[in-house]
Image (cartoon, rainbow, N blue to C red; front, side, top):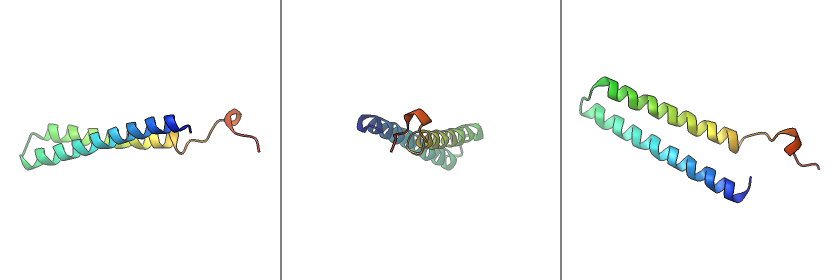
Length: 74
């Protein structure tokens, strides 16, 4: 992967991680304040979705297997 592409992917991964951490913090705060359960549930679903997105981006970039025509000949 090129350095510029890698840098951009890393930025997106950091933004997703930050958003997930903020959602977790907000969820914990709402739990402590006895907020409505639908609000807590919604934040929990967002946390899960962000974790899934993070994993999907990691797998699709850093762990992706190049297509046959993109592989380098040895």
